[in-house]
Image (tube, rainbow, N blue to C red; front, side, top):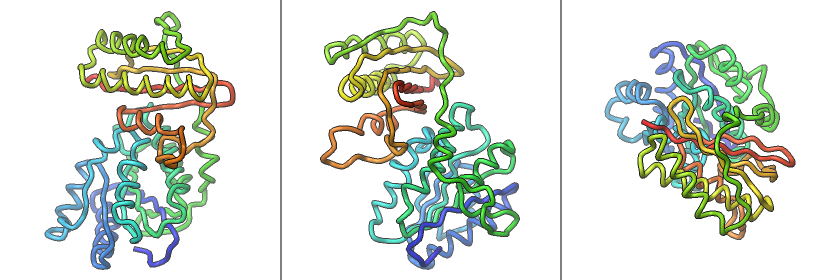
Length: 309
């Protein structure tokens, strides 16, 4: 655990349980010994490794199942990291956070990389250390992107500067690309004002139900669509378009408008209490299993994913 007030964001490239524990257990043990608030957020296999290795002191570590709380990568900063940091406000912190693992979908991948880049911005002034394990079983492209989003990298027990680290804004912009679009024959609902929102919710609910999405999750998707459509009307000047379709085990609702989301942290942090904008994206990140966005001046596309199973 660092004693400085500078935020430390390291990547750990591991290939075996032994390599994983060789880095994470001393990191966690040292932070516990120093009385530092300590968190591990990882898939269950890896939290089980750490729990066994730490023994009795594991009960002092806050443990988060990242496959649940971090299912939507956009939710990791507000719901996992920021929540923990704020809970221990004024104290240094130590966090093991594994956002990317084998099994993440192609749709989740770019959101994971944008998340890792934004961590450097969000916590730049924080007095804490974050260690981000990454399984070397991932594709070489993924390992390269992890190195681009972490200033320091640990490989084979050796820690050193990442020779490919890039500015967060550069990485986020590179992944701000047009999203895969649905079949052009899909029904489209056009909306333009607040009076259209009940019809929008009915449209989303009807198509989500027909796709097999359970009632409670259908309601969540309707609420998420309502939030984004409200943003379209109030802040992008309307009108907008809504579509719903199924792809790879998810119901996807897409809202398209002519606005522009300029802040890459939008949806990853709560806006000031005096702000009338910025909460819609945060809300949908909590409601949905995945949120993807593409925004440039003149067009914004938000896709909200709900797992069918």
